[in-house]
Image 1: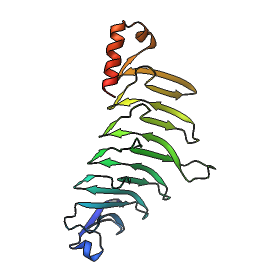
Image 2: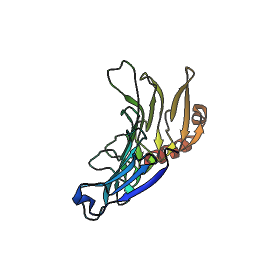
Image 3: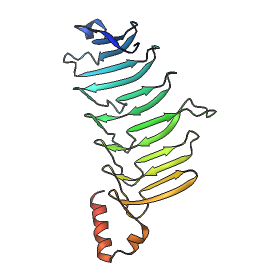
Image 4: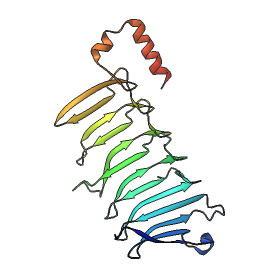
Length: 212
């Protein structure tokens, strides 16, 4: 089994020596993983982990602080790569949770697009707050095809499909577009909303405003 880890090395004073603090190897002796301390901190509280494909290409780069994934200066805490070196995805974390401030996506997945002038383009954008899909006023999840055509978008509130006066989820399957109305994950229809009493509408709108 070429992917089996057969040996590990831990270096003391790695920061001083300019060496990784921890190295794992594949069965054939090629490097599987390296752990590097950041900024020569004496307590090793911040470090980067590089994982390698058996062919030697980097497949994942992760940044940790105090043992959990954490972004620094709005840089992604985890980046995955394809075998050819193109970026496959980027993820932003805060204290171990998918999270990004400034109304920016915390998860971006890329897809090769032939003849686009760029090696890869976003195909998935997702906004997270403390590990839950969440965004105010705009879709928290957007999916595109490899050709850049819109495939799906959804409004999310604290991990639930949620919108009050418009569809919470809109997606295309086999060329047909579908709208789904949901209020904190519970499906409803336009008729359901039209049949509500004024008091029920007022209550639902108050809940929607309060949870924004």
